[in-house]
Structures are given as structure tokens and as C-alpha cells.
Length: 121
Ligand SMILES: [Zn+2]
Image: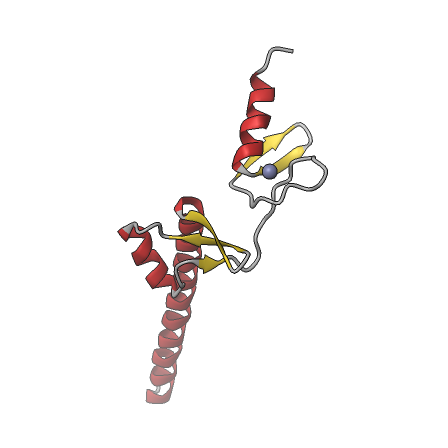
């Protein structure tokens, strides 16, 4: 192996390490955002659905790591799938498989759906 080949291999190894680290950081940030969405508190900021730490230090640390303001306005909120008219204006808080497919419901509609499933037919 020539010196030039050795240097080229070292540079390639360094590039691969950087790509791997970037992928890991991106995966960690996505996982942390999922945790915050699941355990953060619903809020409204300027009429937009948002999420807040509620003053919990673990969530405050997560928001800081993500670079999010508190409250954080959710860029693409997922709305409740309840089959009601007019459409339910609430953001989804849970998802569940149903006979009609996977549905995402707000807290109120999830409890109504669950009660209907538990009711004797
Ligand atoms: Zn709803």
C-alpha cells in the first residue's frame, strides 16, 4: 500500500464515521421528539396547536436539546379521525387499530370509542 492509498483510506474512514455520527444524531433527535410529543402537554400558541414542558425538568432538557421554544408550535399536527360532523377540531393523542383501519383520536373521542367497544352488544 502506498502512502497516498493509506491517506485515502484514513480520509474515507473519517468520512464514514462522520456520516454514521450524523445518522445517529438524526435518529436520536427523532426519537426524542417522539417522546416529547407523547409526554409533553398540549397547549395552544397564537391559535396553533402546540406542546409545552409544563415545567417538567426532563421535558425542559429535551426541548433544549431539540432547540424548541416552550411552548413549541407543532408544524404538522395530526387531527382527530373521529367520524363526526363537523370534523373534530382536536389534535390526536392516541392511535388504535379499529375494524375500519388504524385511527387516531383525541382523548375525548378515544374514550368514547373505547366505551363503545366495551359496551355489551
Ligand atoms: Zn376528537
